Length: 405
Image 1: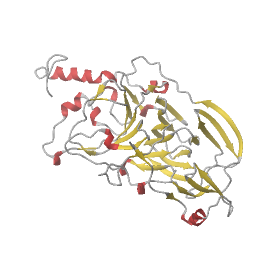
Image 2: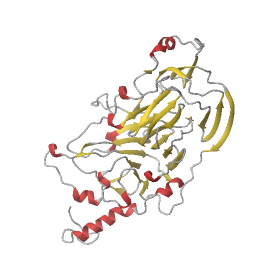
Image 3: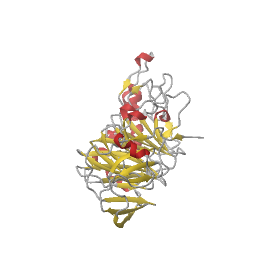
Image 4: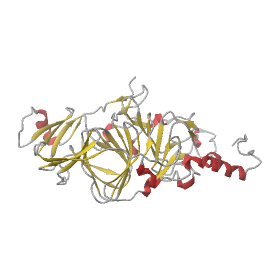
């Protein structure tokens, strides 16, 4: 079964250089040097990319797992918006053998230039704006963007203002979900709406060291010149940004659609999936459900189904981890306040925006998540149930009794 598909379009940049790109035979010409990335993308550079001055090993990329009390099926909640704006502060929140869930905060300092040979990266920009410099040129990012950086591609975030990102790194890669026979070609997004790298539009930073990850080990590579030397490129391996307002999904009026209907990216074997729950007509609440996969949900705006949670869970900037093995669903306050529309025209418009990362393999909580944990989230349904019963003693029996909402 095919779960994903490759990107359809071969992107090009610097039209003035297209004639040179069409004549590429591997030889330098016009004082430019050709370079291929993964034999999928061809570039022209001002300097050869091979001028390495030094290579130093930095560290092994070993996850430090949390020893926080509790079972590995305990639902967790985090306050991502409490992470400090320190230079290049990367917090590893949860991980398994091939996937990492990460929060990244950047002050006004640029991030380290990173070339990851192990995993594709997908970031959601929660706050801030700036420029992402890459092998193929820069492109802007802003709050609300999804920023995709495939493995092999160099990325370097240069913020205009303090920036918060949450993201997933998948060693098996991330691609577009397979199209269904009835899907428009603009689902989940129209590739013409992508912000792709554009060489020579702004001056690149004179940064000459790159952090490279290979086999879980980080090294620092020092070049004689900045690696941001691209003047033209073409190919099918490229980074980009797409704003969440540009995403498109099919809708339904009779059932509450499962998150798979809102899939934006997936690994080739669907062991990692990214979905976006955006503004939409909502005819009902989500089901109470038992996860087949582990589910991490980042609330980019206030999320209605979490209304009534303790500790502000569901507010913008919070995140939940729902492991396999324990049911979860809408909070009792959300259920209590729900009024079923009498007709499709009365379906409420909800302005939710949540980014969901799902993994087939169980995620392990990491040490970096401990300072931003929200205590007691796993009992929030029970606590709100007791509160409801105290206010409606004639409607509900004792705790564990039977009654209707």
